[in-house]
Image (cartoon, rainbow over all chains, first blue to last red; front, side):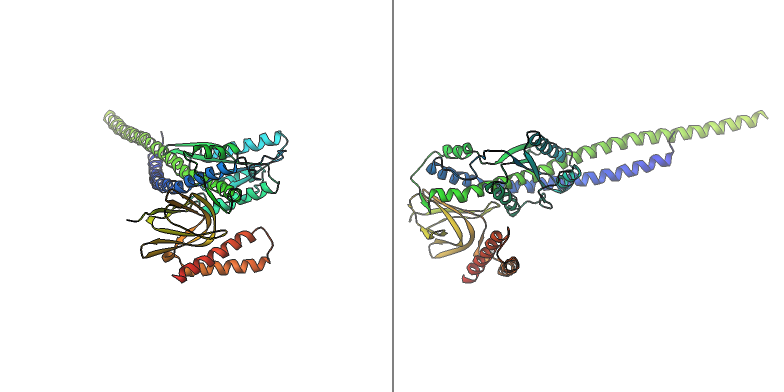
Length: 294
Length: 135
């Protein structure tokens, strides 16, 4: 039977672990709300943006733009993997990393060169370890992504795409479905699918005669990169909220598990204590009986 | 009461301003445009500059770093990359940003990937300073 003092030690240590996981759970809960607020405040811009894009697309018809055109050959694919800087958030990162690596592997099997842009320390470390040196890495932005971060990621792939160095860009991130659920998703970033633009145009109920300054096609030319930026920004925000959601869930089950463990340990402790007492009594009784005999 | 416009200045991160006003002036790439109620539907690209919003005698100034404007049925949406209301611009910070951008630009001597972004930062700092100090 385990030593009483050892059991006591384990109980104390599990209790302090529970204290920590419980605090982390509460911190994550508070952060979820803030991250959700940020998603909300990004919405008006995104909606207005789609409206403008729809209007412009309607008037330019099937206008061509480097970002709308698919390259003839698919030799270089870039995957933007949006992970977190910190762990202890369940399957949050492993889902993203697994999906990203799978895309890389598939593209390589198809004969294309595939590279990774790693967002978050977890992705950077993972791909380095796997011998896939990221084309670019971004750290310390996962917690509180700003539009500037999104812009710098977006402009990097846009420049590469326009220059013909990149033929397709995908972004892998956790979508924040609700507080309890995060869904890993893969979105095509580049080329921008013409359907997207057309759908935005179709969604408008009214199509008044717009005046364009300077012209519809030049507005479109400026607008498409901004559209990509908005998509990246949105993905980063979704991922930030998801990270906190995933952490809250992971920490909640850790807290629950710690509680269970403490119950079991306390039971073992009591049983051991009782056993020890019984033992002592038996010894005393046995001793007394031995004395009587003699 | 005279007809009014609803104006909304939004950036990707937040709604900077929304109000019912009489006139909006914005810097498009080809020059400033003023929008009054009953303006024809318009979509335009903006460069870095000053947005003015007039409401009776009161005028509010904003620095915007470029973006888009859409006018439709007395509703003006300004999609700005970045926007700040004149009274809240931190001139000191803008000066610092300008100094950093200038220094970096002269270091690079006008070549490299960063130049475009730096020039944008520089213009944005200049616009912020001029809007803040003018009003």
